[in-house]
Length: 256
Image (cartoon, rainbow, N blue to C red; front, side):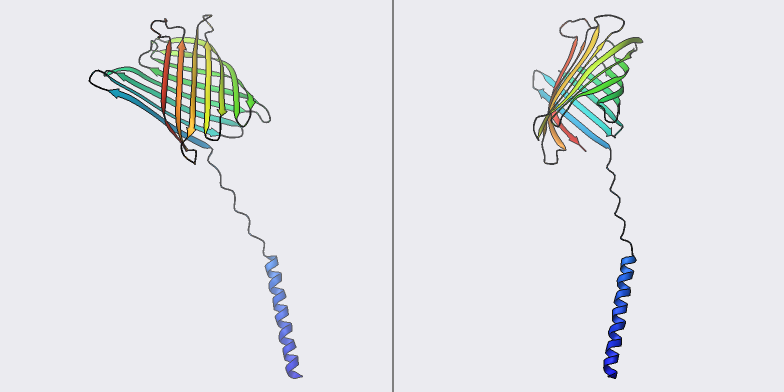
């Protein structure tokens, strides 16, 4: 009997200890989940294109470098871009052109309307104006917003200043930008902007560009591209096609 009583006592003490341990475990709160890692809102792109030929009779070289930095938030989109062209023919420079743009777009919640402000700087060694800076503001509207097709239109007003000629030109702005995802590997982007002169009716500038892009790797960070760009200036006398500044290129770009 004494041995049975001892066994029952030990069993009761073990049961009490187990219940106490379970109660303590239940009282300990579960650890809080780790906060989600913040994604970097900035995306970058660098592009380069190179073409050339040289023989005993002629030498021609053509370079293009471009870069873009873009930050997308729920309330606004900031886009900084630059594009540079350099060309030689038989050892002589025929093109030395830089274009830099800063574009800020403010978004309205649950609306396709936007408001934009843009500053553009250009330096063209072979143009009559040499250097030009312009600023423009106005509304924009996302006309089509589909997974494979996006079209935005905008309108605004501003002015450009050319130096060293110290010439001010007030202008309107009407433009569109298109992004067409052809398939899971390729895309076509297009932009058109016209700047009518507010002082001289019938005078205007026109910028048109189009670029085809195709993914070269599975990460979609390396792309091949073929593009064209033209800037028409009605102020320049149309002699030997000098009213148009037409460029064509093929190269690669890296996104990160």
